[in-house]
Image (spheres, rainbow, N blue to C red):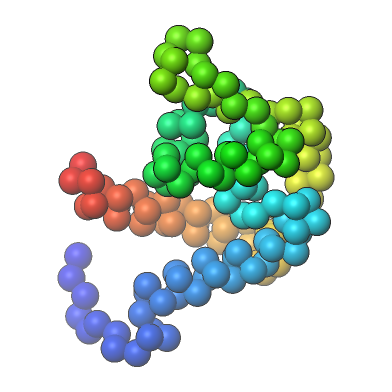
Length: 150
């Protein structure tokens, strides 16, 4: 794909639009998550555990598209708040398995309203959100493939 004219103003650059959109998303989530005592990365990690409890830290890091050394302190903070527990994997003593506590499981009910609020806040239709989601996944995967050489 070739681009005829590259934008020269920040407001016209794709990277600027995605950067500022990401910040707007974080700011929009913040008041909802503050009520639950969570940061956005903690919320996403919990969401992954609500989907599948008892995951290894390495698996969570891969799904979060983060390094393990970034995810470990995040998990430790969730553990400190009583939302998760960590234990050595029975099959692989080097791996750490993260599981929800009852408190962590109960947070899911409170968090369910956040998604609906966020969808409404976007002012995008279901079709537009679905298309945007697909494009963002393709963008992320393409950029990661270039970085990793895959």
